[in-house]
Image (tube, rainbow, N blue to C red; front, side, top):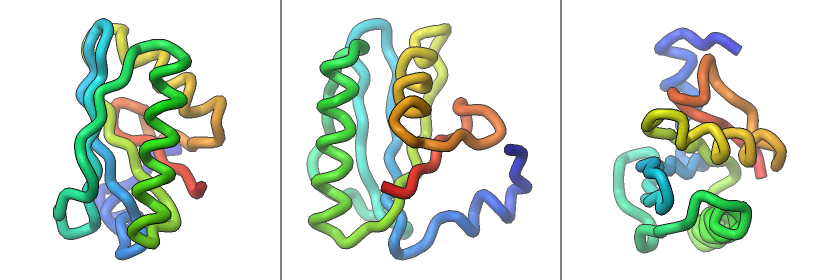
Length: 109
């Protein structure tokens, strides 16, 4: 789906967990924030394979529950082709993509 800049911004509310993921060949790093940019929890390092991605979703769900968040936006830094497996894993687990997953993925967990 193609969103305008304002539509993207309006998706981030007090109930949104915003997660940025730095993509790498083997180990990705994620950090979680609230809508104001306050970091929530500790950063996570996870492998670019199924077990690592499961670890990521477990981490995100725990932070959401601890801070009363109802949805999450995951921003992916697209390094080469290494982000594709993670993006596919998110889609397979109920995340919706924005215009491109390079911009963000959204999910209501």
